[in-house]
Length: 134
Ligand SMILES: N=c1c2ncn([C@@H]3O[C@H](COP(=O)(O)OP(=O)(O)OP(=O)(O)O)[C@@H](O)[C@H]3O)c2ncn1[C@@H]1O[C@H](COP(=O)(O)O)[C@@H](O)[C@H]1O
Image (cartoon, rainbow, N blue to C red; front, side):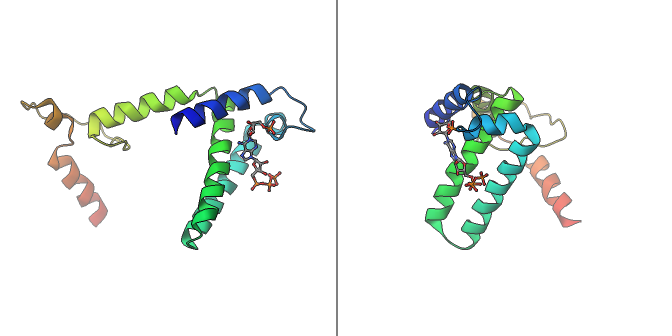
């Protein structure tokens, strides 16, 4: 999947300076980040609605539109796909899955196995559960 996104990202970069009258991407760049953000949000909502309605084919189509709008916003923000892949790898190494790191800095226990060291300590998980109980 990352290859497809990287190819799309390069195509978006190449289209940025085309004629906005014929290139949707060039038009989005002409209109700027707020228009890009609006389109991205619209696509995300369309994916959600289609998923809730159980329309799998529509979720596929709208997800492709969503990913297109993500790459446009990345290009506009100066974010490269490899920047995102690096962050996802960092999270995977730290937590075992591509997951958002807890907000507060956490000290991992010193344990023999490096694999176990990468897992979040139970205490942090309990903390997360405790937060949910309030
Ligand atoms: N991958 C895409 C791509 N995916 C989705 N889209 C556009 O995103 C739109 C989907 O958003 P919407 O559902 O809001 O469609 P819409 O309502 O018709 O669009 P608007 O009302 O926002 O104008 C589609 O109509 C497509 O025009 C894309 N437009 C371009 N690309 C690629 O981007 C590159 C540059 O293409 P141009 O922008 O045509 O130069 C090429 O590689 C293209 O294949």
